[in-house]
Length: 305
Image (tube, rainbow, N blue to C red; front, side, top):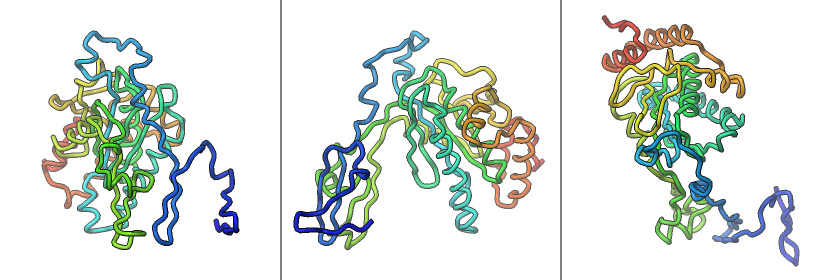
C-alpha cells in the first residue's frame, strides 16, 4: 500500500488497525515502523481458575505446566547438502501440516496452541495444562504418518513444562531496537544486517527438544513423568525415554484430527508399508543404527539382517 503524506500528516486506514488502540512509532533514516503492543502471554493466566488434575501428585509431575512437543525432519542437514529442493520440500510438508492443524481449530476445546519454528523443526506448545498427552500424541501420530506417506521421515519428543515470553529479560538495547519482538536491525535501517531473536522460552521446549538427542531414528519419544496417564491405544516399545510405536498406536482422536483439518489419515498397515519403502529407497544414506532403532520402535524386522 502507498499512502500520500499531506500537510497534516499520514492517514492510516482503520481496517489496518483492528483491535489496536495505541501504537509505538519508530523512525530510522528512511524507515518508519508502527509497533502495536504485544498481547500478554496466556501462561500468566494459569492458576487463576484451577481445575482437578486427576492425580494426587500433579505438581510434582509438572501437570501445572503446559505440554510441549518438538518435531523435526530427520536427516535434514544431510539431505540439504545433497538435494536442497528435496530438503525444503520436506520442511514445507511439515510446516504446512502443522499450520493446517493449528488453523483448523482442532484443539480449541482445550485452548489455543502456539507454534515456533526452530531451524528444520517446530516447537508446539499448549495454552493450558492437560493431564494426558492425548492432544500432542494425536498431533504427532497424525503428522508423522501423513509425512511418511509423502516420503518424509520425522522425529518428535513430547514433554511438559513452562513456556513464556522472555523478551522483557533481554538486554535493554535489544528491546529498544527490536521490531515486532522478532527482528533486530544491525545498524540504522539494517545497514549492517539483521538479527532474528526468539522472544519465548521455557522447559516445555528444552525438555521436548532434549528427548530427541537421546536416541537415533524416526522416533516418537515421550516424557511420561510429565503426564498422569496415557490414552488407551498407545503402544510403548522401550523406557527411559519411553518410545511410542507411532506406526501402530492409534486412538479415535487421531482420525478426528485428520478429518477436521484435511490431513491424510494413514492406518497402521499403510504406515508400515510407507516406512519400509522409505528405508529401502534411502538405505545407502541411512546409518545402520538409525535403521535398527527406527524399525525396532515399530516392532518391524530390520531389513539389514
